[in-house]
Image (cartoon, rainbow, N blue to C red; front, side):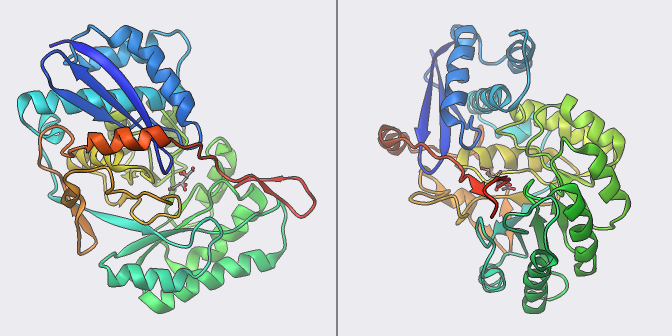
Length: 382
Ligand SMILES: O=C(O)[C@H](O)[C@@H](O)[C@@H](O)[C@H](O)CO
């Protein structure tokens, strides 16, 4: 079998899909995207396609190595997201060619389903207790929300009080066992992160996410040593080399690589295994589209340390189109009791509605995240 064409589709709300076609009529789909940089990732896919076209799609490990090591410069969000989407599509082709799901090629599923959580509250967290109740009524047993709005390096305590009030309201509404993840979203700097992490401790959160940016590893160590809440991070780390020092340092309890950012199924599987060897859990990051979610579920099937899965149905980013809109078999993601079943169809297990994708790509998108400013006019992390 030979790869004959590689096409990208930039589709609303903020995604990019890739289709790899072959001379045997089998095609594979992937989702190479870094939110806000979709066109840059698509350009990188196009550059990598010079090497892939004409090759046998079955040699995934070798293609991965060449795409990663073969350009001299390596790593980072754009390159690794481009490799990610191509890698997903290559696995999709292999599964379809052999008539089996990707998890079967990775040794077979070790779970039937995985717990999922829902986003609540939006960019500026508000109305979170009511939204948590709505999620609970739909069967979800866990939610995630942004902790704060803009936060200065040193800010007033009322911002922390507001976070505590929101979390307390969810606890009162949903009870002690409901899963609550609080995403600090890189908005919080070390001095406030220490306070916030400590004051959130009594609420027994499922995790706090990116308490500080992952590049501030010394600050992470400080927080990890002074707080019993599990610490999650990893959506802005892209390779096993990026995760190496974080795992060795013992700064993290849950890794959250994104299989559309961290080199696809091939690399994320290795990152998950590295985490398992440090007794660290896996909660794959996926505020993205349906092909990405399908790739995530293939990994959840085979990674022992996976305990929950992010998914984007109804997320604040999905304006105009949502998770199920580009699928011919949307029932593959029916949630039941707060869980989603591992897909059993060949390849990634989703059937992409290509006509819909082509129509949507004609519209495209130019999604960018907001630029926030503090009251004094200086830039604020979003
Ligand atoms: O955990 C999550 O889902 C993320 O923090 C998510 O909100 C961001 O990564 C967003 O996608 C950036 O554009």
